[in-house]
Length: 238
Image (cartoon, rainbow, N blue to C red):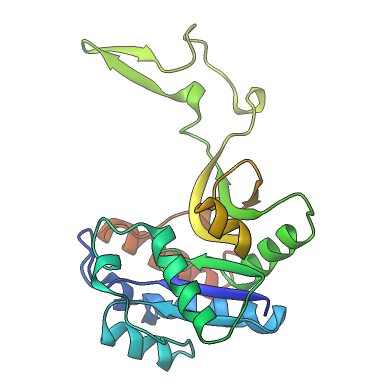
């Protein structure tokens, strides 16, 4: 088979309790990622979408919106210290024991509902068409947080982080710098098993626009992203 899309969604969240099932812009948060992954899977073909969760409530909600939830995540993978890579490999192992073999595996974080099916398909094709690459992750260009614009405090006084001359740079003068924006991660299955990471020297960057780079960690993020989703639904953002 081609791609196994895995949406990791724990029941616990300290920053915003119950966020994965919290309604946002008309539907539960997790539904946005389920729908985009299902649309991408249909376009790519021969692919599956599953939700890895530790609660029956999230599992039933995922099924309602069309995803599979074939297991409940074991306790050791459902706490704050559980590594994402272990969650992904657990899901992959479960599906392989069901007789399914995949070329690629994708981690789709429900905390980035702005990412859509087009983004997922674009990233998949970018990875598939590069013979030297093994994985791809979403990145977005940093602006105000560029290293040349950052500072630190030394005994209360400002001290440049990288710009040692205190020179004020115009944006046109600086190189583009990107950050990991966290909306999607795709890897060749054999590479992920071997490297146990999506990040390495053979990782591509799939450039995402600024408005899609925000993640939901707390209530402030939730409020901001709800407005972004509404703007997209109204055709203001594309």
